[in-house]
Structures are given as structure tokens and as C-alpha cells.
Length: 244
Length: 252
Image (cartoon, rainbow over all chains, first blue to last red; front, side):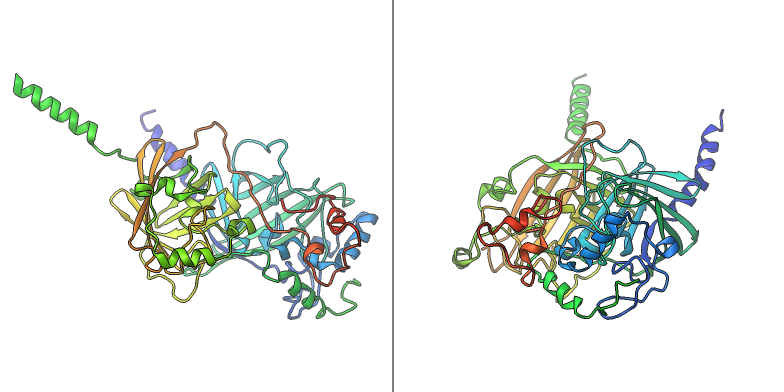
């Protein structure tokens, strides 16, 4: 056992090398998911066009009542909580640039947008009687994939600006898989038995930002006329836009 | 014999007076990481932690203040600014990386990602939490903060400042469970001279303690603020707020 310490150090190096490859500033490539996670046209207000969206299969398995509610919500974009400067929630916050720090006990994710941050605890379990926009995150490593179990999410956050919503029964499992030095595949499985008929998946790549990339402050407070801008923007959406 | 006593007394005194030496991070800097909290009421009246409990206001600044808006900006869910964020009565977590110190505040999920490599301050732009540039002076983390604008207050007792505010914060580990926090506050448009605040930050040692989400946005409900949405029904103007899908109007 004289060289036990050496074995320990050597054994820990590959693990560290793998896990730390998630560290850095990441820019998601979501082709306008913040506007709609389903396929949608592009435009000034709509953001980038997306022929595929980020949802696996290109469709969401809503229960009938929920499909009707989505239709109603598309007429009331002023209710979008992000327009009122709320947190986006998970997975919505993941469509925007963020930074990752990895430690044995925690993975820290710092987002520029809405000055949101999230601490992913690598131990413990979801607290009871807790409800939050960003939920409660517990992580574990599967090889070099970071798997994050997110629960305790509230029913106020939404998936995008196109009325796609969920309930407080939502449970999200995220998978961050490094594929090369500058790319991480992000995948989230969404399970919400109150709203959907089955779990569904979204996925998109994260690209490493340039070395000199840095955040500035994103302060968003009501009274900034966001709601008014949203309605002005509504006028720019083609009338048949929601008829997919 | 007496010489030996004197020598050992001196040695003992030397050890006793020696500064606390903080554990180090991988790059040899004092380790400030952990969950910390101020335990005072400075967020309500900063003079509690001000040197001499006095704030050297210029007469013109007092006049300006009396004419100003009387609502504390944080009542509208604005970020509290620096130094106020440091003494908001909520815990915060410090994370260190070589060349970077990160502050994650429970209060309104504020965050500061601060480089410890010197760079000039940004010019022509203001931030609620300012532009922070840090460096190490011995075992003290020194953060120079400018570009703070004039929208924040120092506390809810209407101690205000102008856009010339310049804050120098100093974080020094003073024991296993404490950091000494000091800040020099300078604003030639508001104060007759620079003044100082000082307080201990305490480590939260509660087993299993974790930061939680704290969220605040004003008037939460689009229907309440939206000018083009259907008009409020006659009688109870708040009826439509109460009928918001969740049945709970108002911010959380």
C-alpha cells in the first residue's frame, strides 16, 4: 500500500479530464427554440427559421385539453412569463449562453440571460415542499455524460413563446454529453403526465464560445415595456403560423 | 531562565497575534469558497455598519434626495447594486477558479463573475451590479466596482448615491468560519469624502444547507399590466387578476 496514494492520483486523472471537459462558456444552437421548440418559419420577431425544431419527432404529445390550451395561449403572448422578466425555468433557460464549472460536489451553471444561475448537487435528494422556476437539480456521472434529474419545477414557466406549457408535475432528465473539445450534446427528456400522453425528448448541440467571450449583466425588470413589445411583435407573425 | 520566559512569551504573543492563515485554492490563493451570510440589518440602514455610523452627505445631495422618488428600487424587484447585495440578509455562495471569483447570491438569483486579472473598466455603460475588476492584495480579495449608475440605493432608509459611485470591496478570511468584509464608498457628487463600511460574513455551517431560489418580478400578470388586453370588469378591478389560470395573482 506504499504507493496507494499514487494509484489514487492516477485513477482520478482520467475522470477529472473527462468531467472537466464540460467546463467553459457554451452557446446553444437551438435555431430559434426560444420562439418555438417545434418547426417554425423565421422572421424579425420569430428569430431563426427552424425546419426541424428541437423536439424529437417534430411534434408534442399533448392531451386533448392541453392542445386546446396551447391554441388559446398563442393568442395571449402577453402572458409569457419571460416577458415579465421571470426566470425561463428548465429546460427553457438552456437555449441561451451559459458557463459551466465542475467540482466533485457541485456543477455550477451561470446564465447570462435573466442573470439566472443553477447549482446542480452531486449528492442528496430533491427537497420536499419546494417549488421553483429552475426546480431542484441532482446530478450524476454516467461515463463522461452528466445526467441531471430536475424536479420541484413550478407550473409557471413555459417551453417557448409559442404557448407550449407544462404543469407542476413536470420531471426533466437532462444529459450533457461531450462529443468533441468544442461540442456538447444536450438532451432533455420531459415527463409530465398531467399535460402529455407520454414522455418526449428535445435535443440540440452546445458549442464552446470563443476564448475572449464574457458575460455582461442582464437586468430585466418590469416597467421595461416588454409586454407592449410582445404585442407589437405579434402583429408580425403570419396569420397561419400556428396551423401546423 | 528569565530570558527563556521572555522569549517563549514573545513567541506565544507572536503566534496569538499572527493573522489567520486561510486554506489555499489550487492556485495558492486564500480559499473563500462556501456559503456565507451577513448577520446584520444593514440592508435596512447601512449606517449600522458604517465607520462612526455616519454617512458624510453633501448638503446638495440631501436636497436631491428629498426630491427623489421615495420608493426603494428593490420594491420593484430591481437588483440591489453594490455594496447592498453584500449585506442583503440572504446567504450567498462563493466559487473560485484560477483567475476568477464567482458570487452566487440567493437574493433574486444575482450573480457576479469577476476576473482577478486586471483590465480597464468598461466605459459608457452602467450595470445594476456595476463593473467589477478584482485583484489579490496579499490574502485580501480586492474588488474595484464602477459603472454602477444612480438607480440603486444603499439601503431601504433612502441612503442614495449618484452615478459617480465607486466602491472598493475587500474580502479577507479572518477565521475558519468568518470573512471580514470592508468597502470604501466614494462619490464626490454625494459625499464630502470617502467613507467605509465593515462587517463580518459568517459561514453557514448548517448540515445539508443549500441555496434556494428567490424570485421577484413586479405585477407578474400580463393581463394586469397589458394595455391592449380586455378591460377590467366593472365592480372589482382585481377580479381578472384573481382569475389568472393558477388562481393566484401577483408575483412570487
